[in-house]
Length: 450
Image (tube, rainbow, N blue to C red):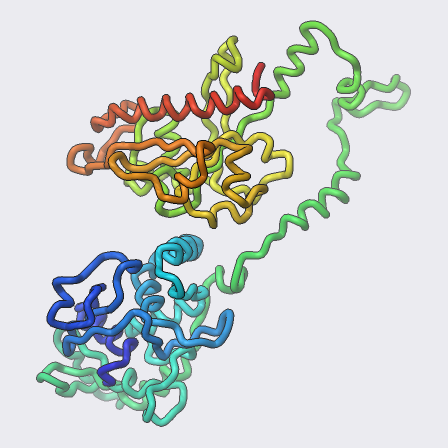
């Protein structure tokens, strides 16, 4: 084993169940005392197995990514891909972009595509001894097989007995320090060399990045709309006078109560846009319990696990200053504008943000100052913490609200959203202030009045 090779050190540490730790020290004697939890702060990775040593996170590894160019991936990106191995692809990309904004100038996380990440995790876990993205060690004789990876995987427990009778198996030998080492038989290694990695439906159907097919729907609508027949009740039978269709009724002049009732029925639903960031306190899983019931529950709470599959919610609320009759407004809540038509942006009344500019890349107004000049911005954070500098630099167009920190011991794991158990009595005050800001913004625009 090469003492300075980050990939082999990482793989052997996983096999020995002695994962490396992040630290700000390059000295092995002080690495434990200077360990940190954040990749944005850490500078080195401390390995305690088999020999204590520190490697810089910016060091290049033998893992070579093919997109967007063929370059070696640094140890920081390898560590990030491992700790985020169980998160979905879209969340992995969002977390990588979020970490990029926190790293010093000139440092960034290499965003591995799905196939590369799958290949890397498979190799690190020891499920495969070959990788088409990993260069062989110098002096290993070339080829795609890493000799050191083929020969030894440090076992955490007892060794694996030899498979007798078939001539193919795993032989037990003694390695450094008397630890058992697994050595793969040559014939078995040949079988492993012939294996082909299979992707899942995401890698087969989607490729490197998702494809937008919204233009196909618009094209199809142009053709299908011409051939759609009206309902039987609206079709004119032979020999009967022509019945006015919906277009004729819509164009007929109206007056008095009929005109007022028609204008009321055409009232469009206002839209609230949430932040898609994984660090946001309010997401689609817990926004309804917060805005509707006045109770904050963490987005990943077990009580809300059944509400994470939807991508659109509706909340009704009466706004007396806009409609004194008490007729409630129905708000549409989404976390992405990808299904928006151009006129939908006129209906957006609030945008929740965590201060990350990448959220606005697909918006009609991409610059925060311009966006929050048209739409109310909402930042929700924990009480006692200041808003990010980005939020404060965007001016009065963004209103800040703060929640009490969630305490699992105090609030319990069985929080009833309907009865508002769990001592979250200050949430209602925050919710009312938030609704007041949204109502005031809608009132200032004018078109939401009755």
